[in-house]
Image 1 (cartoon, rainbow, N blue to C red):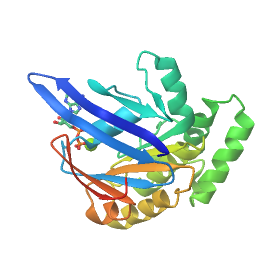
Image 2 (cartoon, rainbow, N blue to C red):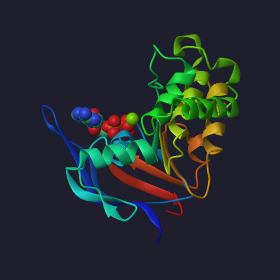
Image 3 (spheres, protein in one colour):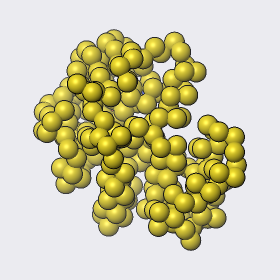
Length: 227
Ligand SMILES: Nc1ncnc2c1ncn2[C@@H]1O[C@H](COP(=O)(O)OP(=O)(O)O)[C@@H](O)[C@H]1O
Ligand SMILES: [Mg+2]
C-alpha cells in the first residue's frame, strides 16, 4: 500500500560487444517517508536502477509506476517535467556548472520551473544558508571543497521540494570526515512526504537507511528492513 514507486519484473540490458544484463527481473516497492540504501559491488546495477527511477533511462522489459501511474517512456516532455519538479538527483561528482556560482547553480534549478529570478535567488540563498554555506554563495565550484560542492548539489536537488531524492554514491569522492557530514545532511532531508534512495559502497552509511537493498549482478541479493 501507498507505494510511491513500483518496479514490476524490470530488466535492463545494454548491448555492447555482448549483451549485458544490468538488471534482471526486479520487483521492488518504495514508500514515501522512508530512506532506502542500495549497496553492492561496482557493476551490480545500482546506478542503472537509479537512472530508471530518474526517468533518464527506460527498462528493456517490465514496468515502473510512480504515483500509481505506469511510466510511458514515449512521453519524454511529461517525464522531463516530472523529473524537474519532483525528483532531486545528487551525483558522486556533483555535476555542478563550473561557470556559475553556488547561488546560480541552485537558483537555476528553480528558474527551470518558474521564471521568477527574485524568488529563485531568495530561496537558493535560504537553502544554502541552512546547509551552512552562507559565506560561499558567490563562490564558483572550483573555489569550493568537495564537501561544500556536494552541499551545493544537495541544495540544488531540494530547491523544488522534490518528493523523491536520489543520490548515487554521493560521498564517493569525499574523505571520511566530509562523507559523514554530507551523509548527515542527506539523512536530515527525511520527511514524511519524501522518499530518499541512495547508493553507496559504505556499509556503515547503508545501515543508516530504513531499508537496505543489497544488489549483486543485476539481482536483489537481500532486503533488510521493511520495503
Ligand atoms: N550505458 C551503458 N552501456 C553499457 N553497459 C552499461 C551501461 N551502463 C551500465 N552498464 C553495465 O551495466 C552493469 C551495471 O552497471 P551500474 O548500474 O553502473 O552498476 P553500479 O552502479 O552498481 O556500479 C555493469 O556491467 C555496467 O558495465
Ligand atoms: Mg554506480
